[in-house]
Length: 341
Image (cartoon, rainbow, N blue to C red; front, side, top):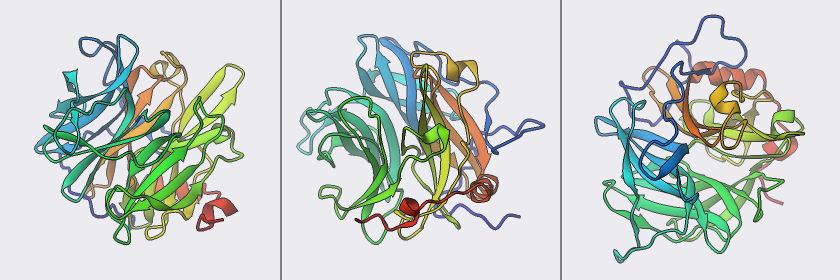
């Protein structure tokens, strides 16, 4: 048995799973053979669902989904599943209210993440706050969704909470950007005692000289706590003569000071190769947003957006993927420092 374990996560005996194909080479991450698990035109008035987040809930699974409406405006939808593969997406957008219970709907919302911290579920997305910025809402029953104060001023994207407090503070990763498609981007970390006031900002890691992440990077799925540190699946972007390419990378952050990168894989873990990743509304995109992970078996199911058109599913095991990240790790000075200048 491997000594690398997933920590502080509930068991998920019904985790979706498929054994690796024979002859798997490279990174120990493999695609579900029936991908994509969500196709085009999934519900009325929604043309495409992608870049979405799911997690165990009750006896099954629940998710928040980026739905590109037929008017072109992205929004967040709720879905449920018995097996985390076949999804029933609600036809109406998630209805957000403020703390007083009054309607408080975002202008738009996309690329949601879903994270449980203690007894509360949080949805984090990118929305309009006089420019692209981070939206935040909470729920305990997936019936009432209460929007909270925007954590940061524009411009910012790709925010995700850690699944537990660190040193008594909530911790969030984000990627400060500009008002466009961001020809740059590093991952930063911020802390808050109450999810309202944010500070203690730290640089985590930036783009690298590796081709697949040389333009920008951004947070992906919520970090997974392991005996080696926080396992982070993130996206890295490269520039080509035919546009940008989004790949999935992996890193291990220090368990107590996650602005410190312990290991960072120089190789991508997954890059566009299949038709549903290479061909779509935005070609050549694999964009991680969530994992379901089982500490009893070490199995990890990774959910990712494909070509801004579909939802894909891939699998790995914590001991194999962490060992691979460590074996091919290249950590730079800006990764290993505390992140203050």
